[in-house]
Length: 388
Image 1: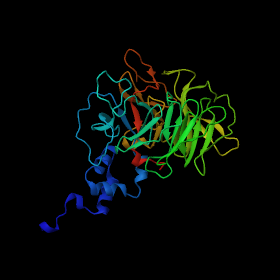
Image 2: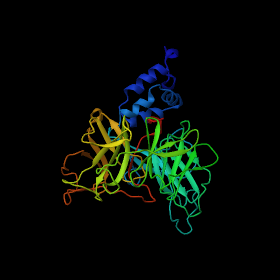
Image 3: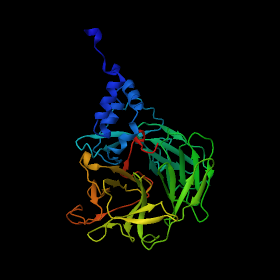
């Protein structure tokens, strides 16, 4: 009898696959993946793994939350830079918080303090669970959930250049993944694993953000012009003709975000120059209709069975989730982080605010920053990406 007993790490792949299919949150999936080497191998080879990302909301990373105590190091992580503990909240599993390790970097090093490999590095963006840090000509990529660290070649820029934005076109481990950056004056591209950068910038100025929609890369500049970005056979950028509308112009939306919801490419923002969500001012959403030439922006009154997740730093990837009711969330809602309450909130699109602010201020201040340090942000673990 004893000889027929299996150890947990020796369970057959078919049985482990059935375990994965029954897990109910990213927290459970990440715990499964970290159990042992054989379970991690089963997770990595799980055939429909990329579909799991449609079932759960992104995780909320809160870098400065003091309630996260020191956690034991996670197995299988080979971290090449100094790190600190960071709290991760899974809103689909509210009773369980998780800690992860993020890079320890500082802008101003104290006198006589030991040197750190990331001294003077600053946060420049986050996409596919990867933080993008840079200092002058140097750039480092750090996967929050695997600990994978990638150093890029020296950028062809002046010594004091500071990046405005950085994003990946796919997870680091995906074929043909590119790092895209905005230096303020130009756009640079680095094919992950290559030895050099390629510069390519529209004639009227650089692109300020990118998204991947149906396998194609789209970009937007500061005037809400839309561009197609081609990565092969060579880097090229072409403006997409879009019908002019009084609904969409460079003054209409404050801090607009591009976001993908299934088969919809959306633009979301607050009207005018407002950063307040009140009874009279709420988020507005527009869908880019690519079925016509030129394309046209159409007003979206409801998100139907989708929810959108906006981070407090515009350089962080804006995310979405389908059928949030499955995990207790709400469709047709915009999830964001409220700095006053230090808690996430859900705002129904097109509906007035109902007491989400403090008792002294019922309005919601949507604070969007571009600070050098990390701010609370929504992230998807790279292994669950829908756009691999």
